[in-house]
Image (cartoon, rainbow, N blue to C red):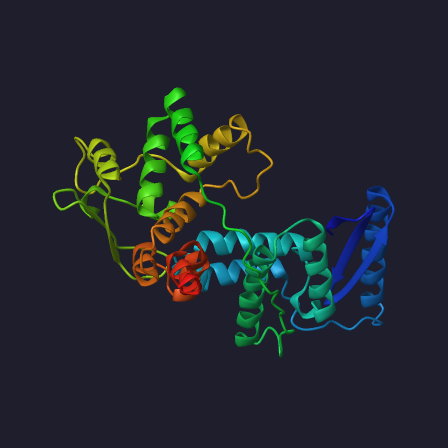
Length: 332
């Protein structure tokens, strides 16, 4: 029986045999009391035959476990799907029976997520997880029909990337605290545009230092790509793999460790309130600098490993050479 903060009140949600009830109350204690009483009322109604069960009684938590086991288990995005679906279950209630979830419930939850400050893109990822679970339920005949899952329009805002000064202070901080691995990971991210998962997945055998390049075999788009190395990235990687076997990881660290050091740097450097100051910003910096140097947009797409050119076109406005040439004709 989840109790969620909603504005100035607390919303209690109760589900039993496919019947779902919600109520907004002033305090958490009142919401908890109502939830217990309402659950008991539904149990009694069902026992007396006044409440008929809906669907097959499959709960959201049960459905999630099944989808993880038979669908997401074999996907590279398994971890992300698990996290997003866990958030969905917490929001709607683990024990909520899937047959009771309506379009109205989904719209209410979208509003709640927006109120909590979640970005439209984040909400869409959560809705995608819910959609996958409910579609699976239809395929398994747990539901006759799933409610329509809306999607929010994602607006491309300002792309946050590091200035030269910000890069210097970030790398200097990691040197100062003797976090050499984190320093080197940031250099590789800045100079190759690799995603965090790609950097962590690098093995010594993926590097061709003699020819100054790295091959990304496993990535988000399932298309291997080769990235030439800058002199700086080449030096860092050469030092990182010294004495290691071909199947060893280039960097012996974890996502949690990267998050820990990144948060330390962000807070120390005064960017604690900057929500866009995240590790992925290194990738934005790589793409932005290429665009600012007027590198062809298709080349940026290939280097970044974007599945579609649409993703890369977010950086196109940073390439102004053609625009200046166009305006230049007015001076003739």
